[in-house]
Length: 119
Image (cartoon, rainbow, N blue to C red; front, top):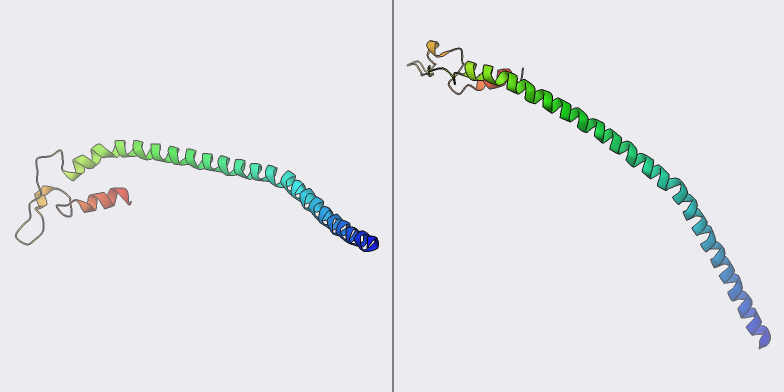
């Protein structure tokens, strides 16, 4: 009986030895991966953040330039659209608009919008 008991203990010790070796190997690999991956992820997130900051700065510059351009063009658009004048576009009998009403293609002034903003 003692021989059988010793044999079972040796088999159990061998299986535990394999399990221990596997656990140490996995934890060592996980530690090495963490040592490599964490700085890499930090570097990547820093790169993405700096790229996004550059893009945001470009968008801010572009939108401020657009706002300044709109403020510069806004009084011109109002004069050309006839908002500041007393002349009102009136339709003629043929379906067009009065030639005295200005240089608009129609009374809705869609052409002016398309002309100035999609030029």
